[in-house]
Length: 463
Image (cartoon, rainbow, N blue to C red):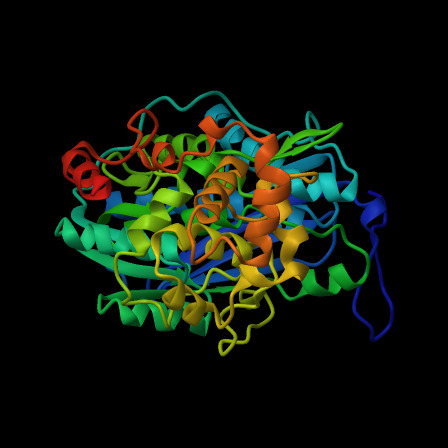
């Protein structure tokens, strides 16, 4: 065993990423009396890294079938959440010490690590393809049974427009739901409480050693957070005996940034259709046959979601999609919009065709499209002389169509960014690709929305 950790007297254990040989999934456990799950990892023979997830509602009374499903969901979470720690050193050897997994599970987790760490690998100059291998046995002999779960949805809320559109759509369809989120964000809490629906705030505490490792030179960068949150909510759904876990990822999440010389890198891979399909199928075959995992907005473009959101002003003073307010180590809830990040740029642009200008400017506190300094940020959204930002934003064609629509409107066309688009960029584009209406269609070919909801939901979203 190579010495990857050395003692430093009274100082924290020293972390040497280049000397680490193996990443270990040590064990995981759940206490139904407290609702606390413990996920334990380690590098080589180094200290144990213990993450905890706390699901409100304890004590949980579980019959044998539910207890077995909780164990399956817990192990799935253990494997997926490990990506936060694995990335610190990206060793080639992976060990699972407390249980065995089958070939199908290994294939899913390898996809989560390779594709979910795509941006991380690109930014750090790493190639993870073909290097991540999870040890496994044969495929499972039988599928997981149904648990008799009650009809109820745990709906993930992130404080932005998308999840609020899903919540209001489910409300319109009379689907019982609990608004759910992970962590201590006050921005999200305010939005959740604004819905007037039952809430579930799940706690997550990352092993503190990871932050120390980062200070000592660990590899660091973007991880597939949605995959982790999905696994947490699946565990919570089994514990609470409900049959749906609902996210709000639209179809544009499936498309990444095209990097010259590299290819496609998708910042939001775990929000895309490939992950949703694979993870949802895995949950039904390996956790509980009657537990549905799906995104309610998969049939929609970002512009179609924006149109739905603009139909009500209920959340104007409460929502925020600005990622600068959702940092791991803290936030500033009084500043809902920074006004300069890609998310602020895109949400402003996406809402502009569907919302009166005074209302939109009041939400953001200023007109982002009348600030010449913002031109480079909007160029990236348009994929004009730049690639799509590494953020959860819509496709370049959506941004171009939205900007073209604004260029035709008297209230917008003289604003600095819009006028510059009309003057310098629009003449280079195919006008047939700038039709907003064509991007508002509800697509039916790729989604996991339950059949019992689909027809009514499709009619609701089409209006």
